Structure formats: C-alpha cells, structure tokens
Length: 149
Image (cartoon, rainbow, N blue to C red; front, side, top):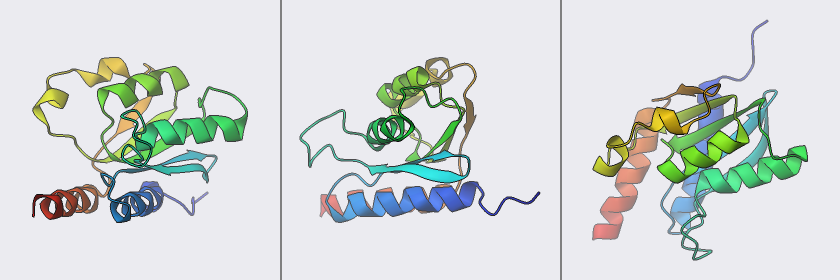
C-alpha cells in the first residue's frame, strides 16, 4: 500500500511551525509529532515568548502529544523537527520512548558534536537526519543574519 504522506510531507509541517517561530522573533525551529500518519501535536520554539530556556519546539510538542494521547509515552509516534535535537530535548525524548525521530538540519555547534548524542536517545528510537536539510538550514541562517544586522 502506498502511503499518501512521507517524511518530506511531515517535515514541511515542521517547517511551517519554524516559520511561525521566525515571525515571532523566536529561533525558527519547528516540530510535529505524528501518530498513525496523523499530526497530533504542532509546536515551535517559545523560549523568548515564555521567557523559559526549556520551551524548545520538541518539549512543547512532547507535552501536546502526551496530552492528546492521554499518556506520557509516545512509543508509536514520530517526531519531526527542523534541527537536530539538543542534549535536553534528546534526553526528554528518551523518556517519551519515541518510535522515531526525523530531523532536518544537523546542529553543527561545537558543544553539540562533543557529545555522543546517540547514547541520549532511547535504544529503540530510530534516528533519521538530513530530511529537507537545506530548507531547514536556510531558515536558520536567514534568521541569524537578520539578527546580526
């Protein structure tokens, strides 16, 4: 059976969220959680809006998805996020027991590469990266170029 939705489709949904963050002056990272080919949670960075360093897109999406499902575990869910999860979000994803994480751009900051993040994810979580990488990276670059002006 051919699925009408693929990783690019859902990453575009995450990019829509990243654009919402961009328009609010937030670092443009977006996330969606998918369960059975259905988006059950949408989120974007809200660290500036909420004055909360933990208000990353992934954290917001985990909370919304758990609320939707009525439980804290997301074992049959996939997280689509426009930037590779940071250490905090990777650790939180461990506890949600996500089935899969799909990210767009790789986080190339030195402090991110210094950590073997695979150990931070749940051992049953599949990780897939570089989906629509250029689109995700370009939005971040535009954001930071505008902030430097």
